[in-house]
Image 1 (cartoon, rainbow, N blue to C red):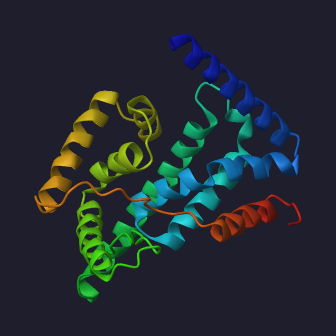
Image 2 (image 1 turned 60 degrees about the horizontal axis):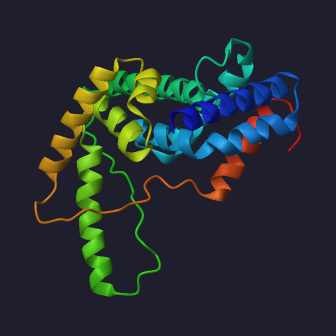
Length: 230
C-alpha cells in the first residue's frame, strides 16, 4: 500500500513538473489544463474564506495570474495543487484583512452589517415538499453554523472537512503546524456541533458548487490576461 502511494505521488509530481514546463514555454493548453484541474478546489477554498461568490472568483483569477507569473519559483517540493492553494489562501486572507480595515473605518458611519450566509444548494431532484422544507431548515442551520465560525477555525474547517485536504496539506497551505490544524479543527467541530440541533442527523452536502459556466468564464478571463486569445 505504501509503495503504491509513493509511486502515485512520484507520478503526480512528474506530471505537475511537465505541466509547469509546458506553461513556462507559453503553451496555452497547459494553462487551460492547470486551471481546469484546480478551479473547483481553489474556488471552494476562496469561497470558504471570504464567503462571497464574486469575490472568491476574483481571488482565484488573481491567484492564477500571480502563480503563472512566478512559475519559475515552483520547484515541485509540494504538489502543484498545494502550491496553488497556498497562493489562493494568502490572497483570500489578504482580502479579508483589507475588508475588515474598511469596515472598521466605516463602522461609525453606518449600522452593523448583517453576516452573509454561505448558500448551500438544495437537492433540485426532490419532489417531496415536506422533505424539501425539512432539508431547507437543516441547511439554514448548517449555513449559519459554518458561516459563524471565527476566521482561523473556518479556514481549517473548509480545507479539512469541505475540501478534504490532509492534515499535512492543510498545515502547508495555511502556513501553520499540523498540531495547530488538529487543535483548530477540533474547536471548529465543537462550535459547529454547538450551533446545530442535537436531533439533526448527518447531512451530506455538495458544498460550494463550481458550475461549468463559471469555470469556463474564470479560465477564459485568466487566458486573456496572459495574452492568449480565447
